[in-house]
Image (cartoon, rainbow, N blue to C red):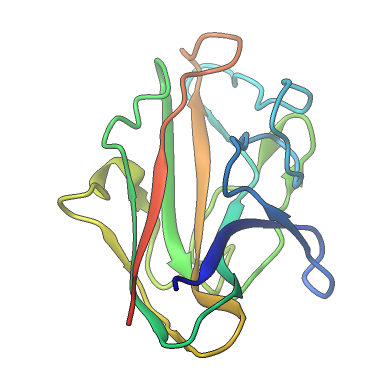
Length: 181
């Protein structure tokens, strides 16, 4: 029997974050630290020429709900390789050892994701298009015979340049994979 594992998006204050099960749904990157599946309220504003605006950081992590009798390990994360979200729209991210609430100006832009801004990042953020099925991001961590969170967080954000088009952008698929032994 396999374990029941979910993908969670975490939002809210450092001391009392809120978990959202996003296993079977879409989630949007917005200029707010909230989970949303639809709409464009608090969308990232297209900036002035020569500037970049950002979504608030998005923290995701695996959560074992039940049924783990062995060990869950060898966690990897990757994109569909087509992180082309639209003209002058990109995505960056990196894994992190702990949760730090995203900050910024709600409805305008999040703060840029850097190691200085989120001290739990394991390295400088990279373009998410570099993490594909052929070259996935390894996520440290394992869990044996229990329930709960497993592995580091995967933290990412959307970048919006001045030549981006208004409206919702294209979507991309992010995949978590692991071994259960």
